[in-house]
Every structure is written in structure tokens, then in C-alpha cells.
Length: 442
Ligand SMILES: Cc1ncc(COP(=O)(O)O)c(C=O)c1O
Image (cartoon, rainbow, N blue to C red; front, side):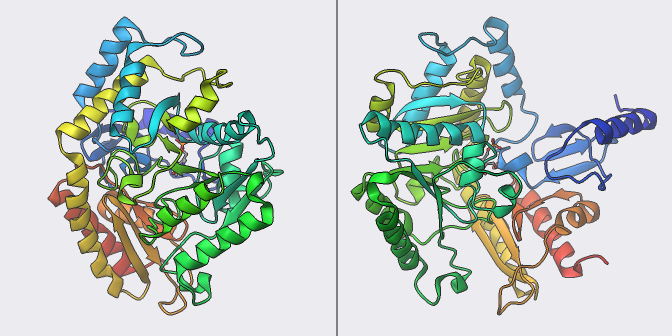
């Protein structure tokens, strides 16, 4: 049953008055109350349908409204909705999920630490990295290396590691002992002064290790393929070489796979695609496709052994949530059964090919695509590659074509469910072409 116009007005007024939305100034009065979802489509409360080309926030891998997921949650809730996972307490879905994740993970992952989402996972991984060294008798290893433009969620550790200054300004002091490095962004050669991006980044890493002292650095954290920065995949030799240098200096590598894990890149983990073996992997989003707020940190055996010997201190109320774990298992089963890794590769390429035709437009700098992770970088000028505003694109695409996209730093981000049909892929490409060809509305 649809809400009446009066009921909708009351909800809108209450939302404006009562809810704090991330990244929304009070002056913006527009609200879209999403009320239903099915497959790649969502509907707002007044019945308007949208094609969800963002997959919520890059997570609706299996699509919306799947009956099987409702049944998995209901079945688990009807026997045990939740119990603590602290100390010796556990539950069957969390045991099964941990084993499933280790089976899917690249070696040398051996243990799993459950969280309620990506930010909690990043916090846990940072704490684990410092504590690992502390337990091994190297308490001076406290520095964390992260990267400019990286995004690691909004816990204080993760927000500090996030290399985007607006998340620091006015929120400080941030967590101490975090150093920012340059990531390889091949579309921006100006960052590397004419040098090869990987060589530049490796030299900078070497210099930083020498300056801080290897015996004072706990870990480096990075997204294997940067998401919020606009789907930036590094050159193939970057991660293996970084990994080697870190290992030579006893520094742990934390890969933040919150966006990339569970099929978005066409692999269960981007680590495999990029041929890198991290010590910790942070996951969330696609773990449950958004049917439950949940994350998991995968920990290599040599790290876990040190951390768990005397018990790793600190957990979350919802760690190993029985219903969340049952939902995650059902979600992973769907991803596997429906071949969604291969689908991400195939449909992502179709969408990517269509969008790359927009590179002819003066305001489009580059279209980037890895599996079903896509970004269009807008520029003021093709030669300087200076960034152009992007915030006008999502509302324009939505109002003109009923397609939902979002904006990253200076890119339009596209990350639909992995169940996308060819017709849906074409519809997304047409919607973006229409908006970008007609340009910014006055
Ligand atoms: C790479 C990465 N890490 C961490 C996070 C934070 O995850 P969450 O929003 O679930 O806390 C995000 C969220 O987008 C992310 O993209």
C-alpha cells in the first residue's frame, strides 16, 4: 500500500528535522525516500522507479529484495538471533562463515575477526597491526603508512588513515603516527614529475622507511584498487613490489578490500587479481550485499598466532552476529551459484566499453573500469587534467533518466549489482551519455 501525499509530506518534514544525513547540508531540502527494491531497481515512496547503478553504496552485489536472503535471516532468527562471540562463546553460522571465508581467501589468511562494517574492520586491523609488534617485543613499531586519496572509513584510526584532507580539517587532533604516501595514479603523471609512477612510489616508500626507521613502522594500509578516489587500479608491479619492500622491513600490509572483495572486480579478492599476499584483509559491503551490516577481517596465520596466544583484546557487541553470518553465507552461496564473478567481468566490460565512448567529450578525462567498478573522471581541460565539478551529475542523471549514480572526489562512480542485465547496462550508459553530453545545467 502506497503512502498518501500527506503521509509523505509528514515523513519528509520529520526527516529534515530529525535525521542527520552524511554529507548533506541543511540547505538541501530534497529527499528521496527509498521504499522498495527488487533486482537492480529501487522505488521511492511515491512509486517512482530508479535503476540502481550505485548498488546502494557499492555493495548490492546480488541485487535487492531477494527472497532467499529473507528466508536465511528468518530461519536463523527463529532459532538464535544473536549471542555474544566474546571469550569462549560462539555460534554455528559464524564458524561456518569463518571457514568459508578462509577457503575463498588468498593464502596466507587463516583466521577471521568479525565486525559490523568496514570502519570497525579498519580500526580492528590497525589495532591488530600495532599490537602484533608489541606482543613480539617491538613496541616502538607504531607508525602506519597510508596513502593520499585513500579512503578507510570514519573511525578515528581509519579517518586518520584516509588521505582526504576534508575528513581531518576541524576533526583533529587525528590519531598520531600516520604518514601519507603517494599512490600510483597513472592518469595524473604530474604527480610524479615525469617519473614512472611505480618507481616514484617505491622510492618514496624507501625514503619514508629510512626516515622513520623500519623498526618504528607497524603497517601500511591501502585499497588494492582505490574506490572513492575514482576506481584507480595501480600498475601490475606496484603491489607485489610494495609487498616485498614491506616484508623485507618487517612491516605488515593491510589491504582494505571493503569495496573490492566478493566479486566486484571479478575475483573473490582483488589481492588475487593484483598478485599480492597481504597480512590482513578488511572486508565488509559485499559480504552480505547490504542485507545485514557486517564486516570481517581476515588475518594471516603468522599474525593471528601472535595476537591470539594470550587473547586479542577488544571486540564488538555484534562480532560474529549469528543472523549476520547466516545472511553472509546465503549471499556468498548466491554469488557462487549464479556465477556473479564472471558476470561482473562480462557486464562490467559492456558498460565500460559504452562509457569509454564518452572520452571524446571535452569534459571527460578518463573512464576507468575494473569488473563492475567504474568511474568517469571529469576535467576542466584535457591537457592540464585539472578537476571539474561532478556534484551536478548524480541529480541530473537521476532526474533525466531515473538512474542512480554517485560522485567521488572528481569522478562519477558507477557500481551496480553484479546481476546487471545487458539492457540495464545499456540504460546506465545512455543515461550518463545524455547528462554528460548536455552538460552542467545552469
Ligand atoms: C575502502 C573502504 N574502506 C572502509 C570503508 C568504510 O566502511 P563502512 O562505511 O562500512 O564503515 C569504506 C566505505 O565506503 C571503503 O570504501
